[in-house]
Image (cartoon, rainbow, N blue to C red; front, side):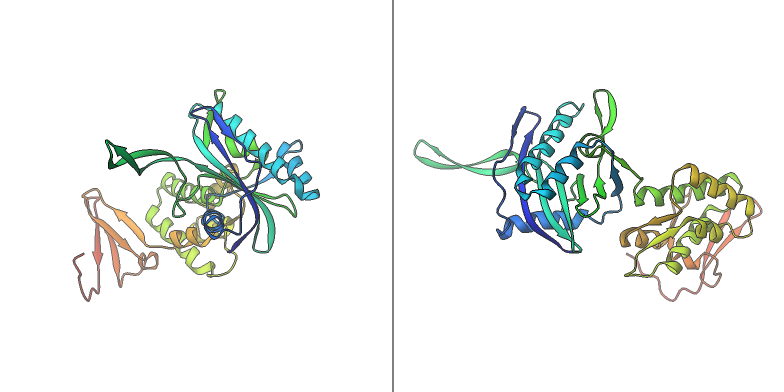
Amino acid sequence: MIASLKRAIVHILDANSGVSVYSEEELDVTDASINSFITKHIEKVFEDASMRNAEFSENSGFKYHLAEYIKDENYFVTMSKFIAQRVYEGVTQSDKPDSSDLIVCDCMINERPLLAVLKCENKIGYTHQVLQDDGKVKNQIINHYAILPTTSQKIAECAFIFEDDFSIKYLGKKRKIDGETTDLIADVLLECIYDISSRESVNAVCKIAKKVTEENGGDTIETLSKMKEYITENIEEGETEFIDTEQVADKIFDGKPGMKSEFIDKIEKANVPQKVEVNSYVTKKLASNVKIVTDIGVEVIFPAEYYQNNEYIEFINNDDGTISIQINNIGEVINK
Protein backbone atom coordinates (compact mmCIF):
# COMPACT_ATOMS: atom_id res chain seq x y z
CA MET A 1 0.00 0.00 0.00
CA ILE A 2 1.41 3.39 -1.07
CA ALA A 3 -0.02 6.78 -0.09
CA SER A 4 0.47 9.92 -2.17
CA LEU A 5 -0.40 13.41 -0.93
CA LYS A 6 -2.34 16.03 -2.84
CA ARG A 7 -2.57 18.65 -0.09
CA ALA A 8 -2.27 18.85 3.69
CA ILE A 9 -2.61 21.26 6.59
CA VAL A 10 -1.78 21.12 10.30
CA HIS A 11 -3.59 22.79 13.22
CA ILE A 12 -2.26 23.09 16.79
CA LEU A 13 -4.68 22.01 19.52
CA ASP A 14 -3.20 22.64 22.99
CA ALA A 15 -6.01 21.70 25.36
CA ASN A 16 -3.72 21.89 28.40
CA SER A 17 -2.99 25.61 27.96
CA GLY A 18 -6.33 26.40 26.33
CA VAL A 19 -4.68 27.66 23.14
CA SER A 20 -5.52 26.50 19.63
CA VAL A 21 -3.79 27.80 16.49
CA TYR A 22 -5.62 27.22 13.21
CA SER A 23 -3.43 27.52 10.14
CA GLU A 24 -4.50 29.69 7.22
CA GLU A 25 -2.03 28.08 4.82
CA GLU A 26 -1.47 24.55 3.62
CA LEU A 27 1.73 22.57 4.15
CA ASP A 28 4.19 22.28 1.28
CA VAL A 29 3.68 18.61 0.41
CA THR A 30 6.50 18.82 -2.16
CA ASP A 31 8.89 19.13 0.78
CA ALA A 32 10.39 15.65 1.10
CA SER A 33 10.54 15.61 4.92
CA ILE A 34 6.93 16.77 5.35
CA ASN A 35 5.68 14.36 2.70
CA SER A 36 7.60 11.45 4.18
CA PHE A 37 6.41 12.15 7.75
CA ILE A 38 2.73 12.19 6.78
CA THR A 39 2.74 9.32 4.27
CA LYS A 40 4.69 7.00 6.59
CA HIS A 41 2.16 7.58 9.37
CA ILE A 42 -0.71 6.90 6.98
CA GLU A 43 0.88 3.72 5.65
CA LYS A 44 1.63 2.49 9.17
CA VAL A 45 -1.93 2.81 10.46
CA PHE A 46 -4.17 2.42 7.41
CA GLU A 47 -4.27 -1.40 7.39
CA ASP A 48 -4.19 -1.83 11.16
CA ALA A 49 -6.49 -4.61 12.37
CA SER A 50 -8.03 -2.29 14.98
CA MET A 51 -9.51 -0.08 12.25
CA ARG A 52 -13.31 0.04 12.26
CA ASN A 53 -15.55 0.43 9.22
CA ALA A 54 -18.30 3.02 9.55
CA GLU A 55 -20.86 5.10 7.71
CA PHE A 56 -22.01 8.66 8.32
CA SER A 57 -25.18 9.42 10.23
CA GLU A 58 -27.78 11.28 8.21
CA ASN A 59 -27.07 14.72 9.74
CA SER A 60 -23.28 14.47 10.05
CA GLY A 61 -21.63 17.88 9.88
CA PHE A 62 -18.37 16.27 8.75
CA LYS A 63 -20.08 14.71 5.75
CA TYR A 64 -21.57 18.09 4.79
CA HIS A 65 -18.20 19.86 4.86
CA LEU A 66 -16.49 17.05 2.95
CA ALA A 67 -19.17 17.23 0.25
CA GLU A 68 -18.58 20.98 -0.01
CA TYR A 69 -14.86 20.41 -0.43
CA ILE A 70 -15.40 17.80 -3.16
CA LYS A 71 -17.47 20.40 -5.03
CA ASP A 72 -14.92 23.19 -4.50
CA GLU A 73 -11.26 22.46 -3.71
CA ASN A 74 -10.81 26.02 -2.41
CA TYR A 75 -12.91 24.93 0.58
CA PHE A 76 -10.08 22.76 1.93
CA VAL A 77 -8.80 25.16 4.62
CA THR A 78 -12.32 25.98 5.82
CA MET A 79 -13.19 22.28 6.04
CA SER A 80 -9.97 21.50 7.92
CA LYS A 81 -10.73 24.25 10.48
CA PHE A 82 -14.17 22.74 11.11
CA ILE A 83 -12.51 19.35 11.71
CA ALA A 84 -9.93 20.84 14.08
CA GLN A 85 -12.55 22.79 16.03
CA ARG A 86 -14.71 19.68 16.51
CA VAL A 87 -11.74 17.70 17.83
CA TYR A 88 -10.65 20.58 20.09
CA GLU A 89 -14.18 20.96 21.53
CA GLY A 90 -14.33 17.24 22.31
CA VAL A 91 -10.87 17.11 23.88
CA THR A 92 -11.38 20.17 26.11
CA GLN A 93 -14.64 18.71 27.45
CA SER A 94 -13.08 15.31 28.22
CA ASP A 95 -11.87 14.08 31.58
CA LYS A 96 -8.31 13.79 30.27
CA PRO A 97 -7.58 16.68 27.88
CA ASP A 98 -4.44 16.32 25.80
CA SER A 99 -2.46 18.43 23.38
CA SER A 100 -2.01 17.42 19.77
CA ASP A 101 -1.28 18.55 16.24
CA LEU A 102 -4.11 17.70 13.87
CA ILE A 103 -3.12 16.90 10.29
CA VAL A 104 -5.81 16.93 7.60
CA CYS A 105 -4.79 15.77 4.15
CA ASP A 106 -6.25 14.90 0.77
CA CYS A 107 -4.45 11.87 -0.61
CA MET A 108 -4.61 8.77 -2.79
CA ILE A 109 -4.40 5.23 -1.42
CA ASN A 110 -4.63 2.27 -3.77
CA GLU A 111 -5.73 4.68 -6.51
CA ARG A 112 -8.74 5.88 -4.46
CA PRO A 113 -9.01 9.51 -3.29
CA LEU A 114 -9.63 9.98 0.39
CA LEU A 115 -9.45 12.50 3.18
CA ALA A 116 -7.22 11.58 6.10
CA VAL A 117 -7.39 13.05 9.60
CA LEU A 118 -4.43 12.27 11.87
CA LYS A 119 -4.54 13.31 15.53
CA CYS A 120 -0.86 13.43 16.50
CA GLU A 121 -0.79 13.54 20.29
CA ASN A 122 2.10 15.61 21.60
CA LYS A 123 4.73 13.91 23.75
CA ILE A 124 7.15 15.37 26.26
CA GLY A 125 10.74 15.03 25.13
CA TYR A 126 14.15 16.53 25.75
CA THR A 127 16.39 18.73 23.65
CA HIS A 128 19.42 20.96 24.10
CA GLN A 129 19.58 24.72 24.52
CA VAL A 130 22.62 26.93 24.06
CA LEU A 131 22.91 29.73 26.65
CA GLN A 132 25.34 32.56 27.38
CA ASP A 133 26.45 32.69 31.03
CA ASP A 134 28.89 35.48 32.02
CA GLY A 135 30.28 35.53 28.51
CA LYS A 136 30.67 31.76 28.41
CA VAL A 137 28.74 29.26 26.31
CA LYS A 138 26.64 26.87 28.38
CA ASN A 139 24.76 23.93 26.86
CA GLN A 140 21.64 22.96 28.76
CA ILE A 141 19.16 20.07 28.55
CA ILE A 142 15.51 21.16 28.65
CA ASN A 143 12.02 19.67 28.27
CA HIS A 144 10.25 20.02 24.94
CA TYR A 145 6.51 19.80 25.40
CA ALA A 146 5.29 19.44 21.80
CA ILE A 147 7.09 16.45 20.29
CA LEU A 148 5.22 14.78 17.43
CA PRO A 149 5.05 10.97 17.28
CA THR A 150 7.92 9.47 15.31
CA THR A 151 7.19 7.53 12.13
CA SER A 152 7.91 4.30 14.00
CA GLN A 153 5.01 5.01 16.38
CA LYS A 154 1.38 4.28 15.55
CA ILE A 155 -1.12 7.11 15.76
CA ALA A 156 -3.91 6.16 18.18
CA GLU A 157 -6.73 8.28 16.73
CA CYS A 158 -7.32 8.89 13.02
CA ALA A 159 -9.92 8.68 10.27
CA PHE A 160 -9.91 7.90 6.54
CA ILE A 161 -12.93 8.85 4.44
CA PHE A 162 -13.11 7.71 0.83
CA GLU A 163 -14.25 10.58 -1.35
CA ASP A 164 -15.91 8.38 -4.00
CA ASP A 165 -18.51 6.77 -1.72
CA PHE A 166 -18.05 8.43 1.73
CA SER A 167 -17.17 5.09 3.36
CA ILE A 168 -15.12 5.37 6.53
CA LYS A 169 -12.23 3.62 8.24
CA TYR A 170 -11.24 4.99 11.61
CA LEU A 171 -9.24 4.29 14.73
CA GLY A 172 -10.44 5.78 18.00
CA LYS A 173 -10.35 5.42 21.73
CA LYS A 174 -12.88 5.96 24.47
CA ARG A 175 -12.83 8.87 26.88
CA LYS A 176 -15.27 10.53 29.27
CA ILE A 177 -16.90 13.62 27.72
CA ASP A 178 -19.51 15.41 29.84
CA GLY A 179 -19.63 12.31 32.04
CA GLU A 180 -20.39 9.87 29.22
CA THR A 181 -18.04 7.33 27.62
CA THR A 182 -17.51 8.68 24.10
CA ASP A 183 -15.37 7.92 21.07
CA LEU A 184 -13.90 11.28 20.06
CA ILE A 185 -13.40 10.35 16.41
CA ALA A 186 -16.62 8.42 15.75
CA ASP A 187 -19.11 10.21 18.00
CA VAL A 188 -17.83 13.80 18.11
CA LEU A 189 -15.93 14.33 14.87
CA LEU A 190 -17.45 12.03 12.26
CA GLU A 191 -20.92 11.46 13.77
CA CYS A 192 -21.02 7.97 12.32
CA ILE A 193 -22.36 4.46 12.88
CA TYR A 194 -19.59 1.88 13.18
CA ASP A 195 -18.91 -1.85 13.19
CA ILE A 196 -16.55 -3.68 15.50
CA SER A 197 -13.01 -3.92 14.11
CA SER A 198 -11.53 -7.05 12.56
CA ARG A 199 -9.25 -7.43 15.59
CA GLU A 200 -12.26 -7.24 17.93
CA SER A 201 -14.17 -9.71 15.75
CA VAL A 202 -11.30 -12.21 15.72
CA ASN A 203 -10.82 -11.88 19.49
CA ALA A 204 -14.56 -12.46 19.96
CA VAL A 205 -14.49 -15.59 17.79
CA CYS A 206 -11.57 -17.04 19.78
CA LYS A 207 -13.07 -16.16 23.18
CA ILE A 208 -16.50 -17.56 22.28
CA ALA A 209 -14.99 -20.77 20.91
CA LYS A 210 -12.98 -21.21 24.09
CA LYS A 211 -15.97 -20.44 26.32
CA VAL A 212 -18.28 -22.89 24.52
CA THR A 213 -15.58 -25.57 24.76
CA GLU A 214 -15.00 -24.98 28.49
CA GLU A 215 -18.73 -24.91 29.34
CA ASN A 216 -19.20 -28.26 27.61
CA GLY A 217 -16.17 -29.95 29.17
CA GLY A 218 -14.14 -29.92 25.96
CA ASP A 219 -10.44 -29.53 25.27
CA THR A 220 -9.61 -25.82 24.81
CA ILE A 221 -6.15 -26.63 23.47
CA GLU A 222 -7.71 -28.75 20.75
CA THR A 223 -10.16 -25.95 19.93
CA LEU A 224 -7.35 -23.40 19.61
CA SER A 225 -5.27 -25.78 17.50
CA LYS A 226 -8.17 -26.41 15.11
CA MET A 227 -8.76 -22.67 14.85
CA LYS A 228 -5.14 -22.15 13.85
CA GLU A 229 -5.35 -25.06 11.40
CA TYR A 230 -8.37 -23.42 9.75
CA ILE A 231 -6.42 -20.18 9.28
CA THR A 232 -3.42 -21.99 7.81
CA GLU A 233 -5.52 -24.10 5.43
CA ASN A 234 -7.99 -21.51 4.17
CA ILE A 235 -6.17 -18.19 3.88
CA GLU A 236 -3.60 -17.78 1.14
CA GLU A 237 -1.03 -15.04 1.37
CA GLY A 238 -1.55 -12.11 -0.98
CA GLU A 239 -5.32 -12.52 -1.37
CA THR A 240 -8.23 -10.84 0.42
CA GLU A 241 -8.38 -12.61 3.73
CA PHE A 242 -11.56 -13.63 5.53
CA ILE A 243 -12.53 -15.78 8.46
CA ASP A 244 -15.90 -17.43 7.85
CA THR A 245 -17.45 -18.07 11.26
CA GLU A 246 -19.67 -20.89 9.96
CA GLN A 247 -16.64 -22.66 8.51
CA VAL A 248 -14.86 -22.15 11.84
CA ALA A 249 -17.81 -23.79 13.59
CA ASP A 250 -17.69 -26.75 11.17
CA LYS A 251 -13.95 -27.15 11.78
CA ILE A 252 -13.65 -26.87 15.54
CA PHE A 253 -16.97 -28.47 16.50
CA ASP A 254 -17.09 -31.24 13.91
CA GLY A 255 -19.39 -34.00 15.18
CA LYS A 256 -20.63 -31.82 18.05
CA PRO A 257 -23.88 -30.25 16.73
CA GLY A 258 -24.94 -28.88 20.12
CA MET A 259 -21.67 -27.00 20.67
CA LYS A 260 -21.68 -25.81 17.07
CA SER A 261 -25.19 -24.38 17.43
CA GLU A 262 -24.27 -22.70 20.72
CA PHE A 263 -21.15 -21.18 19.14
CA ILE A 264 -23.05 -19.72 16.16
CA ASP A 265 -25.75 -18.34 18.48
CA LYS A 266 -23.19 -16.56 20.66
CA ILE A 267 -21.39 -15.20 17.58
CA GLU A 268 -24.63 -13.65 16.32
CA LYS A 269 -25.39 -12.13 19.74
CA ALA A 270 -21.90 -10.59 19.81
CA ASN A 271 -22.66 -8.87 16.45
CA VAL A 272 -19.72 -10.59 14.77
CA PRO A 273 -20.29 -10.75 10.98
CA GLN A 274 -20.32 -14.16 9.30
CA LYS A 275 -17.28 -13.17 7.23
CA VAL A 276 -14.61 -11.27 9.10
CA GLU A 277 -12.06 -9.53 6.89
CA VAL A 278 -8.60 -9.60 8.45
CA ASN A 279 -5.17 -8.40 7.45
CA SER A 280 -1.95 -10.38 7.20
CA TYR A 281 -0.81 -9.39 10.71
CA VAL A 282 -3.88 -10.98 12.34
CA THR A 283 -3.75 -14.11 10.20
CA LYS A 284 -0.06 -14.63 10.89
CA LYS A 285 -0.69 -14.20 14.60
CA LEU A 286 -3.60 -16.64 14.54
CA ALA A 287 -1.73 -19.15 12.43
CA SER A 288 1.36 -18.98 14.61
CA ASN A 289 2.44 -21.55 17.19
CA VAL A 290 0.33 -22.82 20.08
CA LYS A 291 1.67 -21.79 23.49
CA ILE A 292 0.80 -23.81 26.59
CA VAL A 293 1.59 -22.57 30.10
CA THR A 294 1.41 -25.20 32.84
CA ASP A 295 0.71 -24.68 36.55
CA ILE A 296 4.24 -25.88 37.39
CA GLY A 297 5.81 -23.03 35.42
CA VAL A 298 6.78 -25.00 32.29
CA GLU A 299 5.89 -23.43 28.95
CA VAL A 300 5.61 -25.42 25.72
CA ILE A 301 5.39 -23.84 22.25
CA PHE A 302 4.71 -25.92 19.14
CA PRO A 303 3.14 -25.66 15.65
CA ALA A 304 -0.66 -26.08 15.70
CA GLU A 305 -0.56 -29.00 13.27
CA TYR A 306 1.52 -31.04 15.76
CA TYR A 307 -1.28 -31.14 18.36
CA GLN A 308 -2.87 -34.40 17.19
CA ASN A 309 0.30 -35.87 15.72
CA ASN A 310 1.79 -38.30 18.23
CA GLU A 311 4.93 -38.48 16.12
CA TYR A 312 5.93 -35.15 17.62
CA ILE A 313 3.92 -34.44 20.77
CA GLU A 314 1.61 -36.45 23.05
CA PHE A 315 -0.76 -35.38 25.81
CA ILE A 316 -1.21 -38.23 28.28
CA ASN A 317 -4.04 -38.22 30.85
CA ASN A 318 -2.71 -39.87 33.99
CA ASP A 319 -4.80 -41.92 36.44
CA ASP A 320 -4.33 -39.30 39.18
CA GLY A 321 -5.94 -36.58 37.01
CA THR A 322 -2.70 -34.89 36.00
CA ILE A 323 -1.51 -34.48 32.43
CA SER A 324 1.88 -35.43 31.02
CA ILE A 325 3.29 -33.87 27.86
CA GLN A 326 5.69 -36.07 25.90
CA ILE A 327 7.81 -34.66 23.06
CA ASN A 328 9.04 -37.21 20.52
CA ASN A 329 11.67 -37.54 17.77
CA ILE A 330 13.93 -34.73 18.95
CA GLY A 331 17.14 -34.61 16.93
CA GLU A 332 18.82 -31.73 18.75
CA VAL A 333 18.22 -29.56 21.85
CA ILE A 334 19.47 -25.96 21.69
CA ASN A 335 19.78 -23.86 24.88
CA LYS A 336 18.66 -20.28 24.12
